[in-house]
Amino acid sequence: MIVPMQKVTLFISARHQDGALKELRKLGVVHVQHVKAPVSEDISQLEMALSDVEKCLLILNRDGQSFTDINSAGVNTKEIVSEVLPLSVEKQQLAGQIDEKESLVDWFEAWGKVSVADIEALQEKGIFIRLYNIEKNLLKALPEGSFAEIIYEEKNQAKIALISDSAEARLDVKEDFVPQDDWNTATKDLATLMARSEDIELRLKELTEAINTILAYKENLEKRLELARVKSGMQDVDEIVYLQGYCPEEKLANLLKVSENESWGILSEEPEATDNPPTLVKPSWWARIIQPVFSFLGTVPGYREYDISQYFLVFFALFVAMIIGDAGYGMIFLLISIFAHYKSVKSGQSLPLAIKLFYVLSLTTIAWGTITGNWFGSVQIGALLFFRALTVPQLATFPKLFPDLTVNPQQKVMFICFVIAIAHLGLAHILNFVKHFPQLKCIANLGWFSLIFGLFFLVLNLVLDMEMPVFAVPTAGAGLILVILFMNQEKGINFFKGVVSGLGGAFNAFLNAISSFSNIISYIRLFAVGLASVAIATSFNGIAAPMMKGAGIPAAILILIIGHGLNIVMGLLSVIVHGIRLNVLEFSGQLGMEWAGYEYKPFKENDKSITEREIQ
Image (cartoon, rainbow, N blue to C red; front, side):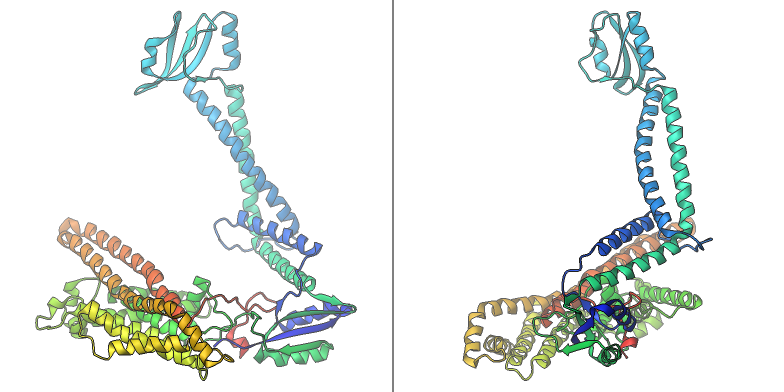
């Protein structure tokens, strides 16, 4: 469920503002919404300090490692930050200077240790030298009275010194000039710059020992910045300041009690239709394991939308099973889950939700792969007596193992995909019906259910060539009529005005009906992606099979590992692209969800959002 919120306004004496904010943060139940834009000099300074600390952490913790502070007592964190940033800037500047000096050294290695002074000394004696990097065919067209000394040549290119007794002798190509620095100066400067760069790197490495102290300093800055923003965002009226925010209804009693003890004025009211409260999702105990997926996606339902955690979990587990479709891969996932579970328990941590979710997805994948007889895409494994006995022939990945089979297993799997589609999309319309009941608008949701139910049989007829029952078209048509007549029957609007408004949107309703038809068909992706996974696994098995003897066994094993590893990775990507899409787009789209919410983050001592356990 999405936890109901109360919009609260707190009135505080200006003299007790600082103390009141500390008490409010200690209570930690109000998601503060600024009454005015929080702008102050303190905020600017804290933002700059926090930005510097974040840059410092990026510089010191480039590898994302964790460190244990050494001799952190008495460490001045500000001084560390103020030292790290200039060192980083200097190191970047040194990198550019080192590149320049290395280019000079490379030039001398290519042309020799010649200097400007050498060239000028020869000019005083009437010998003029110009350096060129040319194509060899130009050697036949040298100026009169000059000759070329080849310094280096490769294929049709040559580095030459054009020597002449005339200052005017030159080639019609770009000249390569001698650097102003000589060889000794360039190498000495390079050594100095590299030594300084190494010193900086060493010092930065030493400072990484204080990373945990810097992290603590960062957390402190974030708390101070949050406090400064809340304080600056309050509005003042004479001797009174006030703030607004949202509090979960189940925590309102605590806020009222503190307000009474601290002599705050408080106004609590239901959020208005124009308000946009934060969202605090409190899923069922068994559906909490899907939260890592929402965190990965960064999606939060709007306050007035649905908590679809339980539906998302059930269908997502089914989608993953059908997309991966291989019991052998499911066993690999299960072993990974067990290993991660062991590591988590060994470290003394509670079992993360992600591992629990991985357990569920592993087991559903094993279950689907078992009843379809797919073990690493191998017909030989599927033919083993034990695995063959567990296979449902009508769904078999390898139907040739069941000679007496009279149905096409692929068509049966596609049929299941369409049944899942009607169940998934139909559930969305039932939920909408319950939400809008007893308003007349709820009848439009029944119309949508009737429409997709009729379209379901049309899809079966077009894709699987199944006979369409006589009631299919009337059911879809009646559903469309109900949608048009009742979709705009809002509360407080005359029935006939709603009908006229619906007729005005009839064309859009027809387009949405076509979209519903395509949504049903889109569930066939579960079959298509699973079939592609089987084809890839079978192909790699076929490549490795002839090599499974003698000296070819290691190569065959390597091919199997690479092939099935690639197939697993592609399967996991398909889960993201297809499995999540069917929930977030097709299903959520039928519910009218826009995922436009934002997370409930109370003003509290720690920066973690309130949890289900805290709500309870």
